[in-house]
Picture 1 (tube, helix red, strand yellow):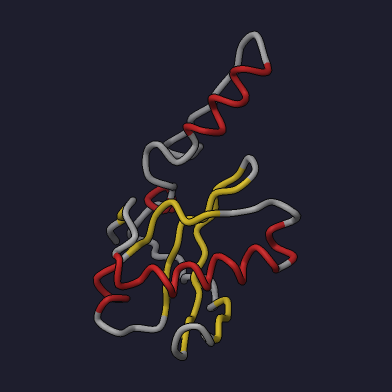
Picture 2: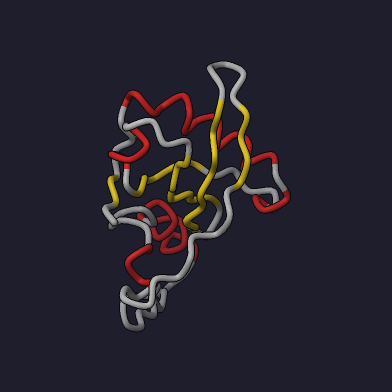
Length: 124
């Protein structure tokens, strides 16, 4: 599984539709999310309908999988089933790419005298 921080231009409209759908869902809990990465972009570029995105908003980042069908601007977006856990790979592989929380960290550092970050076996 490969994470790209840059969304390929050919997928931009599909990714924007998925992000807009997620931001209107109850899972967004009032935060506005943006795509900070995509997993396995090559598969999506080959015509697969599923987009595996890293979404960041508020003070959290999540990996979500969407099924995006149809043509722009009338995409049909659904949240795909959660990815099955692969016992051969630790879940930490799905963490957002480096830099995804830089904006969050800058905001928090400006609000407090110090900040404690805890990393445990690749999880954050």
